[in-house]
Every structure is written in structure tokens, then in C-alpha cells.
Length: 257
Image (tube, rainbow, N blue to C red; front, side, top):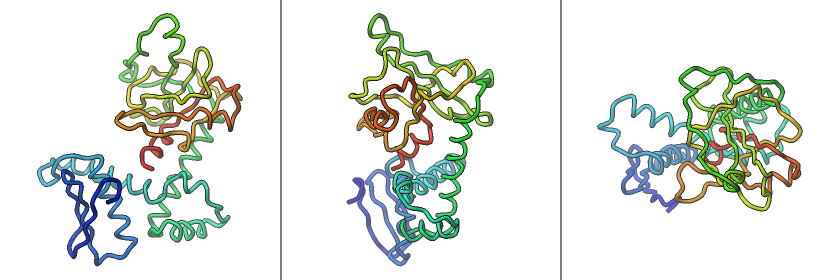
């Protein structure tokens, strides 16, 4: 049993049974194909519900796209990728990924391009100033939870930051603590809610710290939440940090291994 899911090998097309948490793999496929299919089907089992035979086509396609993205994360997790000593030549990097992560060249190439794009966006975000002009339908957001007195002061201030070309979800969350961060305690954060949009031009400063996937953990039985290990952040940046930048891509990496 892997991830609470039973795996059965037989000689037929692979599929998964969500309710029983069973993945059927074709024993005739090679190891790389079995591994790819396993992670694809694992996404269906642990994240999806319903029978695709009876689903509307668009809903079924959405589940398949989600499973493909999940397999991309799971087969080449970023926290493992960043620990590798990479060659200078791009072809050699792809060959290394194929060998180390037991995957196909086109799959490794796609994942490498995805990681490169995210690094490029992150560097771009840290270099330039962003106006937070957004469509009108994004202005109606959920306010911070009401609190008063010391409780209010102890609550983190969280705002959403959007990129220039994608308003479907925030690019990052900007987290500030009115009385300073408690670096000895983890910070529990709801990443599924809609936070107020950052209402001024955004500047990076030396007192900012970017949260990495390795700083995050997923608390059990608290869907939509992540925990930030503040002591890890302080170890990298010191305790003079006054603002945390949490890229949503880091959240995705933490959720998807």
C-alpha cells in the first residue's frame, strides 16, 4: 500500500477506483510508464470524486488536466530538483532528470521548462514594481477576519498580489505581522480564501523574505491550509524580516510533493 492506496498489477488498461482507493497498473508496461500512470491515477484517487463515465466532458477534461499536472510535480518534485548539481548544457540537464527521476525525455523537458518559467517570473517580480490594478470583479474580496484588542494585533495582515497577465488567482500572498513574527512558532495560513488586493505599488525590500516550498507543510485534516516553518525562514534571512512573500507556486509544490 502506497499513500493509503492499493496497487494491483494485471494485464489490461490501467485505471483507478476512487471509492476503494485502488490503482490498477498494466504489468506489460515498462517501469517508467507504470510510474507515470501511477502518479496520474493517484491524483484521481486522493483529489477527485465521481465516475468519469457519467461526467460532462468539460468536467472530465478538468480532472484529467489536474492529474497530468499532479504527475508532473510528483515525478520531479521541486524540493528534490533544487538539490541536484545541474550540468551547464541543457541537454545534459534533461538527461540527468531522465536518469535520476526515471521519466521520459519529453516529460523531463516539460518539467524543466516549467521550473525555468517560474524562476524567471520570480526574478521578474523581485526586480520590478507592480501596480495592483485589477479587473472590477476582483475588487470584491473577503476582508480580514474581524478581531479586536490584542487579538487583532496578533493577527497577520495578508494581501493578495496579482501578476500583470493573470487575474485568475494571486501570484503571491504578502504577509505582514503587526507586532513582528514569532520565529519560534510555525504560522498557520489559509491559502484558499480571497484576501484583499494589495492596494499600492509593490516594492521588494531587504526586509522581505520569500517562502520556499521546503518551508511549507500541509497540516492534516485542515484542507486549504499550509504551515510556514518560520524558523527555517529566519535561518536564511535573519529575524529582521518584516514581510513574507508566499508565491502560490510554492504552495502548489508543497501540496504536490
